[in-house]
Image (tube, rainbow, N blue to C red; front, side, top):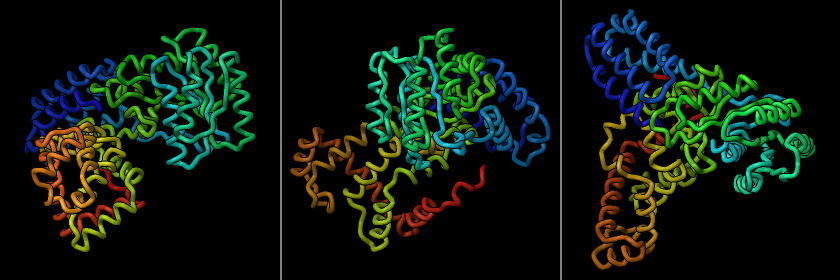
Length: 453
């Protein structure tokens, strides 16, 4: 996410990190680089001007020049101003309103609106234990209603049926009545998208809004459209008051212009980020955490939250107990770790949240999701004995494993080498009680109160 912006800002700030003394000249040089990085990221020009002005005022003032560590202080100034630009704090959904809480989803065609309805449904069920009902008022796009029905079944929420011959207002009214009857906590209303904002679209959604009086009106927009995403959201907000924005496809957005422009241009908070195609690929938007990612400091808190919701605690506890008893880390354990990694969104998602990524070994950064799938296939082709006692895997066994997994012997050798490296890491961690400490942190409810950098 936002790789190009992170790389450009990272190079600029890295030159300042560790410098014992900064002058107005090299601060101005850094700020010039920041301006170019933001413009290349397709951040709206008025937003860039405001941001640069704020950084410059703080940087040339006592905040930086008078600091004992001016290079680090300037980095903190940039991070703080990025956070301020995006909204300071996480604006969560209003889930305190009387049930059923109605959430109206709007957006242009192709923004990923229907998929986002499914993602948000799953998020409400898993994170807040809410009963959710969904309904589609999109009577124009062929297959839109069926698509939502399939997704609702996939995430395990109630689906209110509708058809293309009904009027959107009538569908929404009937769905709201059914949600009350079924005692649903939340009703998500999917609406029709257009290729562009037009009067017909606005009239329809205004009528829907008036009838169902939603607690939340969320605009779903493709982050890869850059500052156009913010301009589209503003045009929509001018016609109908929004309560927030959901940025989709951020996993494919290398620039980040939308994330940095939306709040300033619309005055509305970004509430969620769509970070992948799967229904669990939705993250609450924390401006401070995203700012840390953008300047290359990672996002450890979100990483830990993902661990909390994705890692099988029982399996992790069993692994810790096993290591404490002196039993080795074998290929069965390795396969379990690979599966857990995939459940947390895959390697790309994990790497995005890791701090100091440039200091990680090149081998770790090159470990992609396809490589994980290949390694899992290789382990699946082994016998139970081979998984428990990897040292028995020699020439003839390697040939059989390679054939069974559709790979080649060098790939089997590479996987065994990577396993050996991870085995050493777990051995060291068990000696230092590192794994037990990690598990304690995962279970600790006070984790959310960790001090921010």
